[in-house]
Length: 257
Image (cartoon, rainbow, N blue to C red; front, side, top):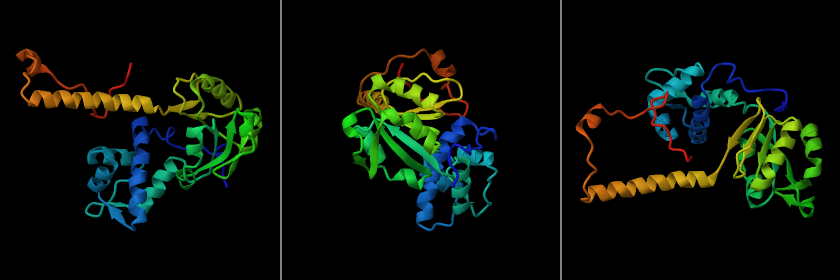
């Protein structure tokens, strides 16, 4: 079986935009659900609705894959599952290490979706000597002293950091020095990495803050429609105003400072 060390996805070399790459997992999830229900084909409108995007954007995304569907028939579900899985590198085995086996790390270790999507949890690593040898999700936890040898012996190129913020950068540095080139960071801190190393950050507090913004805005709109006077806006500003849009025609997401 191939490992993540010997094969790399072809998305960048083929010039697929990062925004499209970010949507491919959404399409794959929707397609997998259709496949499990033995649905043979799907229209761009149906698939776009299931993935939460518009159909024009979906068709543009699929054009980068060389997949255009058949007029009046739609897209072949099984072929698209294979095609997207191949582009994402999910038709091969990607060994992953999870560092930090607290509540979050243990939950990630127990997540059953890794194996079905091409990721094999090769090792669980924690700095607490008392955790060493204890099984989590059927995998014995190993001490951080063994991190470099674990990465080398398993050909690991993807690391998951679920440590407290104060330990994350040191763990990151060790992962990178040992040869890891992609990191999924759950620690509430920004990591500094050299060129050639990809970091994806998952911060639940940021997502909640964005939701709080939208809740506040909805509350303000409800107050306005309930009879509160609207703030006066000069006519010239109203007539000439446009909504700033991103390169794909989307309103840019609001991000915290």
